[in-house]
Image 1 (tube, rainbow over the protein chains, first blue to last red):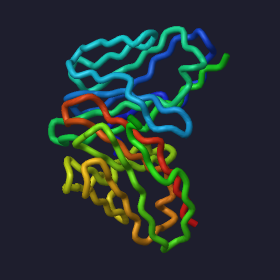
Image 2: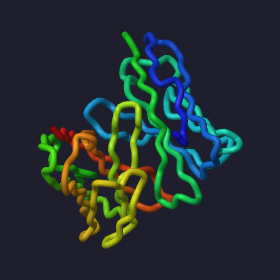
Image 3: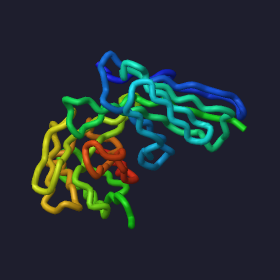
Length: 112
Length: 113
């Protein structure tokens, strides 16, 4: 059973479109992180959210942590080909110490 | 400052062979992790370490062993490789549990025939 469910699994859009990726769980997380991974490389941290309802912006990317700290979303405005990659959410629970639980990822392709 | 490095980058093994993957970090991070990444499975934690001389099992530890003799190095061993261990292996490090996120290495692509 996957603790963190990401949707959609695959997303192919045209340059300039907006999109939202979701990360959902039935468990409460003390913090949630979003990573982006490009082919042949390791994941790179984009953001960490720790407070329920928190919203963080990174240029055209907006990250939100759910009020109950069970879910999160990533919204990209005016997507560009450079946004193409695998987006992973990862949650930390109070009981898991230093460990993270990763979602399966959303493969985003932005076509020029 | 190289961050997290992994050696080798690619390796092909025959069933039953053994090998060691090396992870090194130069950021003085306390925590280190080994993951495997398979299509449709995301990143799964194999073993991790919360400091020099310590190791702990993750989600999928069977068939793997680890050692953290020095703070900057975390070794992952396969004693008798099996085809099911064909995967991409990532090492990661983190300063502290409540600190910034994990820093990942570039990965090792392992094929077991």
